[in-house]
Length: 337
Image (tube, rainbow, N blue to C red; front, side, top):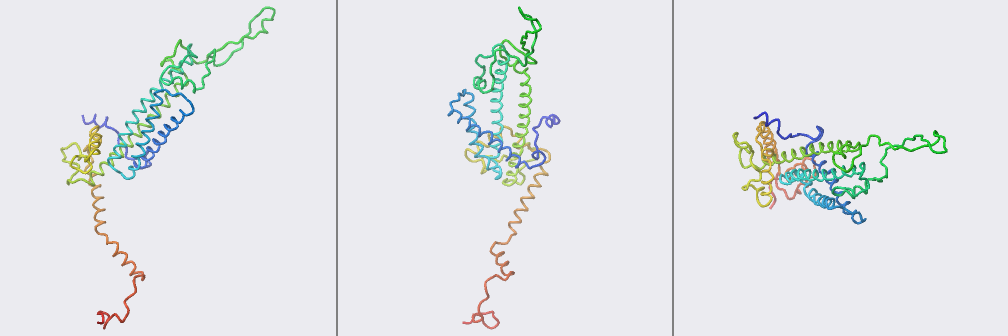
């Protein structure tokens, strides 16, 4: 059972592309998300030019604007390492990926139906699918009377003409298959569709890796926050406990109000991933605890800023001048009355 759990556990990368930290990777991924959502503004501006948009396309552009606002609000907390905002960013990135997958599947099916119609006997009819008319109008299809890829010249006979002197044009379809009507299966079999499918699968493989990086960074921020603010001597909990201490528990500062309730909901979606008390946590906790203890001891041992500045000025000779001799008595130890 333990072997199966290790095989099917969610991967937890410790760096971004083995070159950068998780924080840097999360910042770059969030920047790419911002650039992607800005397209919603240009999509809505296209309405001013008179372009007709289907309800599916319009909903996608409206969602992009909402996602842009949420990303702008959460992105500054990546560097601050706020536990609630980093967790919210990770959960929102997962949700955005699911929504994008739904839109991609819907528009991909429409595109393949339009391609299939272009290579079928129904070419020239109204394009099928959600937003098919807009895709058909902007895809560059010309809907020719005959669907051919090249033209061959053949010789035939005619009355009064030497047979070898007349040319007849014969169209050849090449590798393109035709069908009586548009269908997804026929659209997938087209030569240009295979390239599109490979590109979509490759981009989604990259997207899944980005999800793992953002989740790993949020998990790291949560665990560091638990070590820094825990009221117990061992925030990892008892050895028999499968989970670490919940940072959004009702009795903690982060667990108050609506943020605390929302934080507990997000943690509850995958408590095993965020708070799993796995092997190696003890060494990680001792390393983090030592870091915080050294920081506290350094701050406590440091001299007050005023004493340090006065000592520096005394040694450099730039301090205040000594009192005048008339104000000193005898050996300079007492004032003259």
